[in-house]
Amino acid sequence: MSFRKNFGAVLLAAISTVAGSAKAADQSLAADQSLVDKGAYLARAGDCTACHSEPNSPPLSGGVAVTSPFGKIYAPNLTPDKDTGIGNWSDDDFYRAMHEGVRKDGQYLYPAFPYLWFTTVTRDDVKAIKAYLDSLPPVHKEARKTHLVFPFDIRGGMAAWNAAFFKAGEFKPDPSKSAEVNRGAYLVQGLGHCGDCHTPKGFSLEPLRDKAYSGGGIDDWYAPNITADVKLGIGGWKDDDLAKYLKTGLAPGKGPVVGPMAQVVHESLSTLTDADVGAIVAYLKQTKPIAPYKPEPAAAFQGPHALGEGHYLSNCASCHQQDGKGRANVIPALAGSGVVQAKGPEDVIRVVLGGLLAHGTYPPMPAIGSGLSDAEVADIVDYVRNAWGNAAPGIAESGLVGAIRAKTFGVMALKGDPDLKNDPCAVGADAVPVKSIDDPQNQIAKTLEGMKPETMQETIDQLIAQAKNLAPNFSQAEIINGLTQQYCRLLVKSGESSKPDAQIRIGNFTDLVYTQLVSHGQD
Image 1 (cartoon, rainbow, N blue to C red):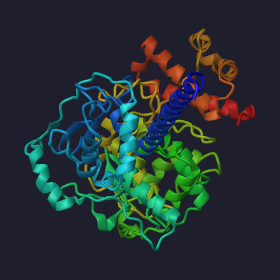
Image 2: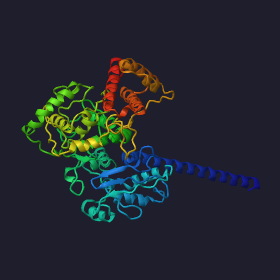
Image 3: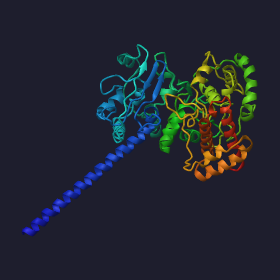
Image 4: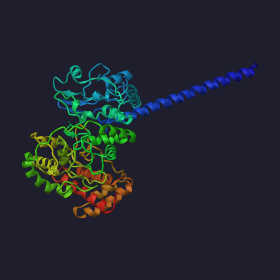
């Protein structure tokens, strides 16, 4: 073979090798990115943001306080910072934490980190989540010290607790169930850790597995029954309505999602594929129906009824109607509501005290309880939970309303939760941040500053026009909440927020914005 032919062959081989290496590198990068994307999706399915992303801090850098009966536990930094995050953790270290509840240094994690549920997640999925976390920008942020009372501050004690209440093991599909139901079971039992809130707990805070998903308390809220029970659970829901509720927080004839679940919908469930949400529905609809309590005879509540009915008629009936049936697509029904009749009264108390932001076609609910005594709120709550065919336990715990009032941050509450560093005009009782109207020229703020009581209606018409121009894609609810946020901030800036009628003024403003939008045909 001539030199020229030999050289050409060598050159061609070299080019082919380089091209092959480049192609392999591209494929490797694509595979790595695919793993990161998969991990990002799974992290959203696990709602890691809820505990590991503190407001006004980089995502997943930790710091959120998780409240327990024994003190506060602060979620750690999950970014790949080598000093304060998990930058020095191997895949096996991370899998052990997820699967066994043990940190890299061998210390036990507290079950505030839901490893009791995450243990079912497959090694491949855990590896994908770790790849996603490793792809984040490292954030140097020291963990806040956990404060638990003795002896719960001794992590070694978790060994005995785990021996009694925890069994590690990855998910095993049930061959008698469909692939869809098994996928739903994997999400609900594992990453979704739905049982962490919706399952009652025993004396040692262990989940009562024989009562799985029948309802449980969390942070002075009550996670309702999500078993297939027809009256108190989701057994009577249409599949499409339940799927819509999980994706959007709203469903025909149902009240909007409230409390921590609103954050779950906002940050997690709304981001899942329709197929995965459908699988969750399929699994929940075939769970064992559990009625977590036997309602007492209605006669036992004649005292609260006698007082509560009058307070209800004075404060609530104009919207929810005397028969508790509300108005279709405008005011949710209280009669027949599983959430209203849940074993725990916490959610109803919270909503009465804190109100709700606007959702979908529903107007905002004013925080009517802010102007009522604890006894009056308790009477109303007992009444609505036992009127019109409803049946639920009465409020037995003395001081419950007062305790919840101290922790309730209502609609544009004019005060923030110090642990969450909340903007007092950005968070409602449903825990979902308000979507702000982008207004670089401060048009809305200037219009609000010129508003007087006698010109409020005309000013609100102008504000609505400005909001539609600045945010043409905003829904009715987003316009209402966005304008109310601006009005709230004006009250804070001017010092008016400290006056006793400030919350009432916010409620009146919000109601008028809603009325004007509806009268102008905004949908």
